[in-house]
Image (cartoon, rainbow, N blue to C red; front, side):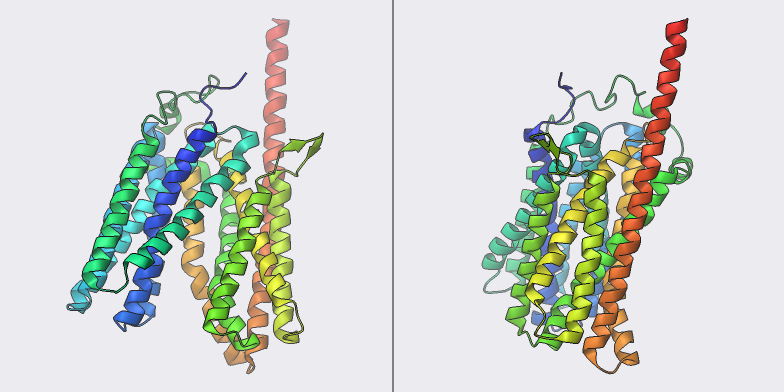
Length: 453
């Protein structure tokens, strides 16, 4: 019999709309505003880079907002509130960018505040959206649900970038503010409509066997954090998320320069190469959605298989990029880039599915804290990943005169990080299996005692 509290595909798609709205606001601030600051305003590229890093750094607040929703027992107020803060940050970021044209100092100060709001909004909305998915989606649907939600986010990226790009021509500061404000308002309205009545009244008791979330959550944030950190699975998965996302993000900012310097790609050709990579990511996501599914008696691999396999394939693909820098045009470079994208997409969706499962294991009422802890690890990894990737290239070029071997050394380092990630993922799954087995044995023993009595 189906659990009436479990989300069907319609409700999962509604959460996907929220993720798409979140992505729409973020992509406008990290792409359009980035370009305006560098090109139209002739500001140093370091400025938008630091602002984006700031918005990631602020997301260390994810465990705190996750704990807040654990205490309250409901997630939708935090999703709506987070989107409201995100929308405000997106609109103010556009105002700040336009203001820089006439008052540079004041505009930069407002931009700092705006990107802090963006980070807090993403932390609140994104964390609690994942918690809601983790608690209300059936285990066999988690990989597919993660794929649907993230594909909808990518669609939000694409649609917003296309429409906003058209509306911003010819550029003016006033036009930028109007477009950003419109996107922010639409995102907030869409979120409110999408989550209206979604959580219902059953979120406080998601299963008849679990105590209400307030029972476990009526403690201070510090005590709740310490409690979750003592869970071996949660701690090890945090390290896995950080290492894997560091390897994932470190490659993004160096792939296109690598293609230009080593293979002679023009700016247009390197941009199309990014499309090849993202095409691979999408196919990898769709493939990983089959994890746990059965067809004609066969299972399309478990989340564990896809997570570990995706990390190992990412390591091989990055090793291939390292070799390509030494071999040159004879190497099937585009295919290698596509495989890199495929592996990244597969491992990321499987990791999100595992995250959704592991968030509900352990003491009840700590789901938001666990999800927030892992989200913070990802945000910190993305904040430092770009700096690590580009900084490592600069360092390698100081130590190695030729650019190709320098890039090869960095890709090789990232490959090693993915191997370490695969080892960490395997350890997390072994611990989870031991824990479930121990719980099962304990329940069996209890049942036997009850039967004897």
